[in-house]
Figure 1 (cartoon, rainbow, N blue to C red):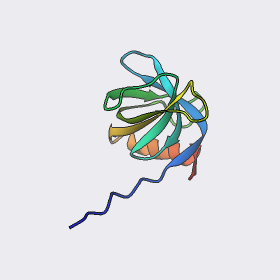
Figure 2: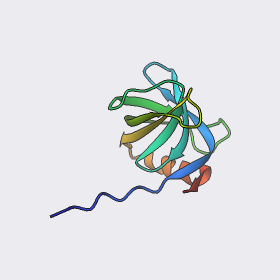
Figure 3: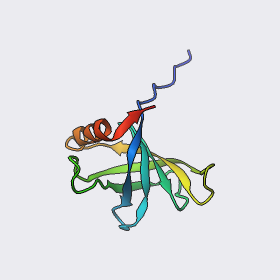
Figure 4: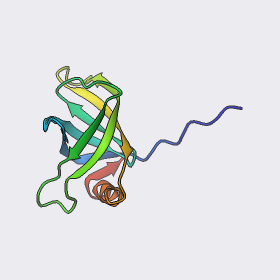
Length: 116
């Protein structure tokens, strides 16, 4: 019996591109441009390895109602940007979202994005 593929999470195209940092190296991985409850898309200047789990921090402006968010995310794809061959689009899947982070992630989605 065939199984239907899992439903894709609602994604939001962000109006503000928040920087995303690797908490281990403290280096900026890129800027988050797309967000869902299960993952995000980041525009990066360097190719990132697929299948690697990063401990990330999504940094929001100081005056934003949502504080910076820390969570684990795994790269699931990485492609050279068709619009700019000096940037990569990188898809991340959130590994686990702690109970205190989940409502903040949803709040960030409500405040910062538009459905697409």
